[in-house]
Amino acid sequence: MTAPENKPDTCTTGSCRGWVLFVVAAVATFALGLLVASILERRTEAQVAVQPKTIGTPIEDAASWKDAYPRQYDSYKAMADSTTMTKYGGSFPRDLLAEDPNNVILFSGYAFAVDYKQARGHVYCIEDPLETKRTQVVKQPATCWTCKSPDVPRLMKELGGPDKFYAYQAPGSTAGGFKDLANQVTHATGCADCHDAKTNALVITRPALVEGFRAMGKDIAKATHQEMRTLVCAQCHVEYHFQKEPKAYLKFPWDKGLAPEDMEKYYDEVKFTDWTHAISKSPMIKMQHPDYEIYTKSVHYYNGVSCADCHMPYKTEGGAKFSDHQVRSPLLNIANSCAVCHRWGEDQLRKRVEEIQDKVFEGRKMAESAIARAHFDVAACMQAGCSDDELKEARTLVRRAQLRWDYVAANNGMGFHAPQECQRILGAANDFAQEVRVATARLLAAKGILTPVKYPDFSTKEKAQALNKIFREGKDRPDLLGNGKPWPAAPAPAAPAATPAPAK
Image (cartoon, rainbow, N blue to C red; front, side, top):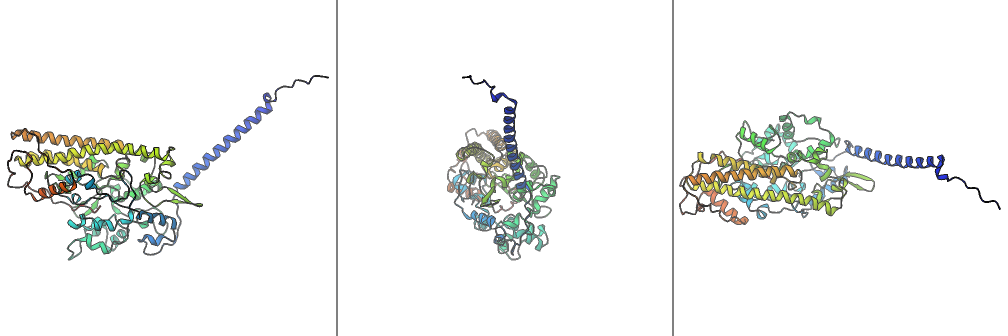
């Protein structure tokens, strides 16, 4: 029997190699197709979704948009849940004065020392300002309503322009324009604040943002759709003040830039002061919530991520894909926000965020502790008989320190939006506070006082508010020098009149 003929291994033939190359090329083509499809899908998501639909009336009422955009409306209404909490945020109205009595000292003489709670969701934008004690103890201008309701653009038009709205004070009203307009500003922040009712396109409805961009030499009309997904938020989540001269007007202090140093230069140049501190008699600035300003210093902003990408991520129901309008912390919705880009587990992502926030919180506590005591250091010099001229430098330094601390503290997110920038700013705040203490120590030494200042107990909200009342009234102030000598009979001259506290 003839032995079988030995044939060459077919795997080494040219035809076999050709099939291998074909399979590899097919797989590569399929993978490339998936990548291209993913890119096209993301580009489609980034385009303006103009879907003209009939909106009911009044357009200021979010319920009027319900039939046209039911999914968006239902998610918007979910903001009524005020029980959600994260480690440093959420919509739960936690008492920030009770949690940190330093706040009472830092805002001594100002309405924020009376009542300061964490804000709830957008659906409470009418209810919360009316209920806070800040609007009950301080006469408020109507400008405080500017960011609370889609009724505001309509009222601006009806009253004859934004300047008329800002200056509005109802004749015979004992509470001023803020309370009087409460019966005309009735719809909480909603659809019409950010969307055109005819096209659904994103729009800027507040003139202050347009004017703020113009002051920086920028044209907001050139913003892309992706940029608009941040700018509609920046209409309100910013620092602003109520300009006194040449007329009452809401203004963003962006003329020199968005950093706290830039704002400080602007405020010093226009000689603006929110209030005079009851303990140190220093001319103070209250930061509102410069979320947009600090966000522009972040790696997310640099990479084109918008506010909506994280706080209003895409959501699917069946075959429908839409933006979730339950505006909230991304930590409450990690799967649809953070995890879209960061491929870690939810627990790992949450831990990473909180580690960053913990470090910012530590720096914030150090700064506010030093600033609170700096106010008492200045007061000790007043008790020792130092003049206003002698205390001018120390008061300027404590103003600088607190402006920077509040720039970070008033932000949402406990510094996560730009942690490195927040730590830089808090470091500067702490440095200025320590400079106050060095300057006041020298003044006391010149008066022959070499013993440490006797700081009163403000370890609880109640104790701190009792001190606030004593210094505000100027009677029976504590002996900060510990030498039994009385305070000078004549109180220090008051600084420029304070602007009422915004209803935040």
